[in-house]
Image (cartoon, rainbow, N blue to C red; front, top):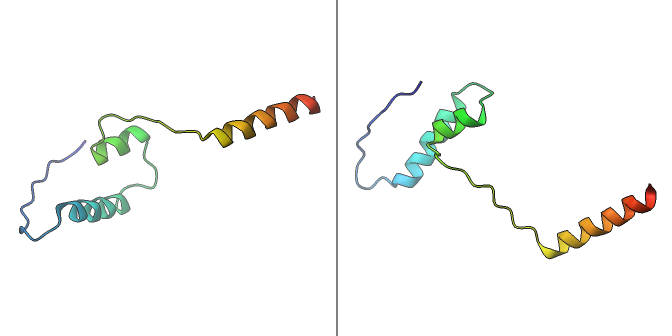
Length: 73
């Protein structure tokens, strides 16, 4: 369940900083545990993308680990 709140602020208020401060205050007043879906709704996130770039060096480390595991088994 959610509520819609409309605020009017002076022009000199930095909208981005105000929103960040408001969200921090809101998160501090929420229950300790929220599901990811509840948090997305709370923060207004509609779509998420998990895109993680893996550097070539990390791929080489993983390859070495696989070879080491083969050797140990």
